[in-house]
Amino acid sequence: MKKILTVVGARPQFVKAAVISRLLRSETWKGLATERLIHTGQHYDANMSEVFFSEMRIPKPDVNLGIGGGGHGAMTGEMLARLETELVSYKPDIVLIYGDTNSTLAGALAASKLHMAVAHVEAGLRSRDKGMPEEQNRIVADHLSTWLLCPTEAALANLKREGIEDCKGLAPSSDRPRVSKVGDVMLDASLFYRGIAAMRSPAERLFPKLGLQGKFRLLTLHRAENTDDAVRLAAIFDSLNKATDLPIVFPVHPRTRKMLEASSIETGKHIIILDPIGYLDMLDLEASCDCVITDSGGVQKEAYFFGKPCITVRDTTEWVETVESGWNQLVGTEGEEIRRALTAPRPKSERDPLYGSGEAAALILEAILGQA
Ligand code: UD1
Ligand code: UDP
Image (tube, rainbow, N blue to C red; front, top):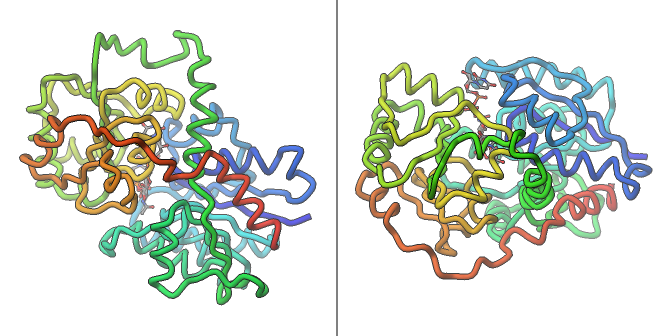
């Protein structure tokens, strides 16, 4: 029986871990591995954390380290020290990490300094912008991992460019890693939970309560490069405040709310401001909206899953295939670009199965437990 220690801490990691943690406890896998779930506490508000555990039925974390807020260095450093203690005590065979947050980085560093094998879900993504904290975290995590579980062909190619290739036939280690394309666990999550979201009664759902009569746009924004720069944030809202032809539903990340308030940035009356919402309500909105405007990594992909055109308010993206397919427009914060994107015709191209077929979680467990 293999011992897996999973590190999560931020909202997108709860979504990704939900599918794998559930599968690990299924009849197929429960005899092969046990999982200890550590929540770093990076996201701590009930609507940024607890709601995901309850409505997605994610097992309650075995430990919550309660390390949220503060600077990147202090946060990551504290996580590193506390995770080290957890790892020394549990002695896992595999440390499972997700994505590109500070919790991902701390998990990768803590494990590799103890010579423990790291499995990185969502390996190989690159925006080619090392100014982004996420890009720094991804690069370090990938270079320390033993299992690199890539969602896309582009991710495999990025790793190859950095000298990381599959060392099939050799004992897996961070120097001789196993690299595989498994698809995207966020697709698994979206397919599984959209049925659950749809089965809820109207009283349980946010969407009917919004009173929307017709088409609407869905907006999320939280990236440091947009929110920490008041001029950039104001430029984004300058464009969106003029897009009054449709309502915009905007569940606001706490970081963004703070920055909007601190910079006294006004949002138009057609922008419906909400607190962060749960995943099931988010799926409802993604399924029903006319288009998505976002700087989120996960939401760009979910727009593609739902066949909704996406406007990405960033200069770069790691989800390059959504842009190449024509379903995602990368617009930066230029008013003219945003306006052009809002009036662009709906993409005509078919949506290829760029992110697999919803079996990424099973392929990930086969990769790490089949060869552990
Ligand atoms: C983090 C990740 C980012 C990911 C995002 C998902 C890093 C470097 N960034 O960004 O990659 O896309 O999560 O949402 O790891 N806050 C609250 N309550 C919370 C959580 C955060 O008030 O529950 C506020 C605090 O002021 C905090 C700020 O948001 O200081 C930023 O939180 P942090 O976790 O540092 O980064 P995110 O912007 O959430
Ligand atoms: N999400 C959510 N409620 C919200 C905003 C986002 O459930 O109010 C979900 C979204 O559907 C996706 C995940 O959170 O599954 C993405 O997280 P986020 O945008 O915070 O992070 P990123 O993917 O950019 O790292």
